[in-house]
Image (cartoon, rainbow, N blue to C red; front, top):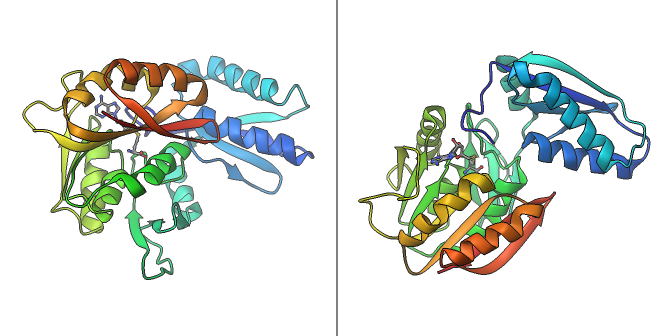
Length: 292
Ligand code: SAH
């Protein structure tokens, strides 16, 4: 996750699929953690896409290869790389993404698919355009799993780092009366607006383009709940502000935290006045829900 998730060119890392399925699983998990995106599984190779500054590519590649060799305990792996233009990537992505059930009732689908739904299903249609947030990443799924069960009817919710707007749309479908969806990235804000409209919830989702700092959202009143899927180092300095923006008995759902950073995040949330309620881990990514 970066503040500008759309490079002109992606660094594409390909790893020949090893014979051992366990090693393959481990590689998929690690590639997904390192890239922050889904990993394509082709019959003969795994393909992962990285946002890397071209001048830093050699050292990034070295780090990626070192990590892959470390997690596979030096099993022989064959890694290659190439560059791919963003337009080509976006097109491939569109062809690859399929609708999925995230909870018993939340279904996320690309806007160009028409999934079959059961009567109680809640459909979130997303065209991420150039933003992060397609439910392809474990952190988005972790937030969705917690939102389903925590959002109360008519609540005011803040979605800090809304990306595609996926969590804001979910919050409204789950009963929120009003969501303030904030992102510092203009592309993400545009995508969030479009997705709110495409899901017919634009009247309940206010998209605000700003970089949230320690003061949270001055002048916007108190919220019943806050969801924020950011990297740990971005998240921790914001926790006190989140606390000051919540009503008594408010809730907080955070993700973007790697498992090994969970303890640090829980401690920081504790110092900011939050108590941990539940934790969820998927593919090395941690999501937590808190009360005040
Ligand atoms: N909520 C989506 C997207 C998460 S990606 C999901 O769960 O899938 C994180 C987003 O946070 C990015 O779009 C990035 O631009 C935004 N972001 C990072 N720091 C921010 C800050 N301080 N204020 C507002 N947005 C921020």
